[in-house]
Length: 220
Image 1 (spheres, one colour):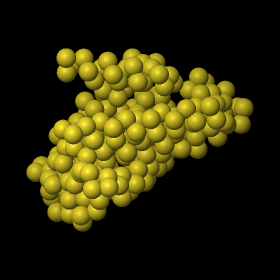
Image 2 (tube, one colour):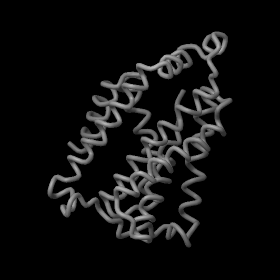
Image 3 (spheres, one colour):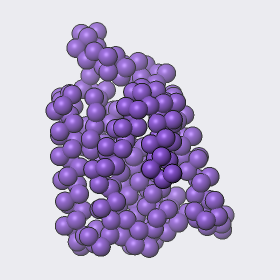
């Protein structure tokens, strides 16, 4: 079951954390925490809106969610600056050392966040929760007949993935120091979906290989 709206969750949190840093002067580490919570909240809203849907219906609704979020960001000028975007987003500071792409600080920060995401994913996959989600993936009706509360598990899954998208959004906003709505286009959701399909659904090593190949190949 595919979500086509993850670029929207990514965008919501990038703007949320970026505005906290640029307009209120909050440090990156606090905006990162709020970004994760904001992503989880966005996932909760999306999850409740789609928990009864499956297959193509889920894809269409999440796609529409992404378009609605983009329109709100573009037109809510008083908060998001509309098409002008958000500038001057602060970068992380660790014991007086500012992390930047040029000094390698962002590479190590990204590596830590990826390791955290992978470890959380492994714990989820190997838990009772993960077994229930795999059962829904293979046959939702059979899982429901075995007593699995499929709607609740779907919502929890989107909340968890929203939190991860939030972590990535906060990181991206701080790394670039500037964001606008055009950055988080439908292509982002398509890239995420292609990585999942290419790497193999449900395979954590596959996600790493898929993202490494599909992100690096265009750059090369």
